[in-house]
Length: 155
Image (cartoon, rainbow, N blue to C red; front, side, top):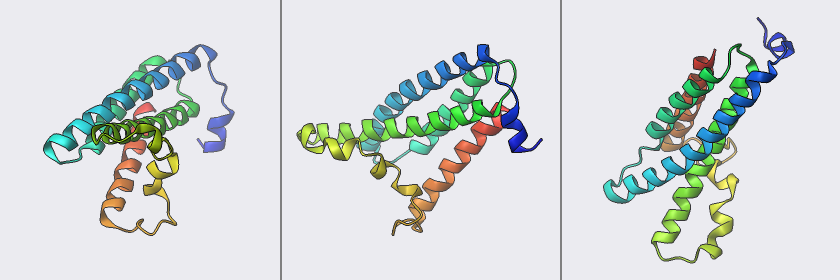
C-alpha cells in the first residue's frame, strides 16, 4: 500500500484519543525522567547514555501506543515520532536546567538557552559546521534508528 493511500484510510475516533493520551504521557514523564537520570549519570560517572535511555523509552512508548489502538493508521506513527521529538526536547531542557542549577547559576539568566529548541536539535541541522563530526553523526544515527524502530514496531 502506498503512503498516500495510507493517509486516505479513515481513522477510528475511539482509537485516536487513547493513542494521543499514551504519547503525551510517555513523552512528558519519559522526558523528565530521562533528563534527570541523564544528569545524574553524567555528573557521577562522566558518561552519556542518553541514546540508550531514549531507545528504552522508544520501545516502551511504542508498546504502550500499540496497545492503545485496535486498527493501525499511519497517523499513529506520526504521533509517536512527534512525541519522541518532544521527549528529546524535554530531556535536554531538564538536563540543561539541572546543569545551570548545580553550578549555582541564576536560572533566569539562562532561560533563553535552556528552552531554545534550536540549540537542542542542532545535531540534525545539516547546515551546521559540526554536522559531519563523528559525535554528531552518531547522534543522528541513533536518533534515526530510534524513530525507525518505533514506526516499525507500531505496524
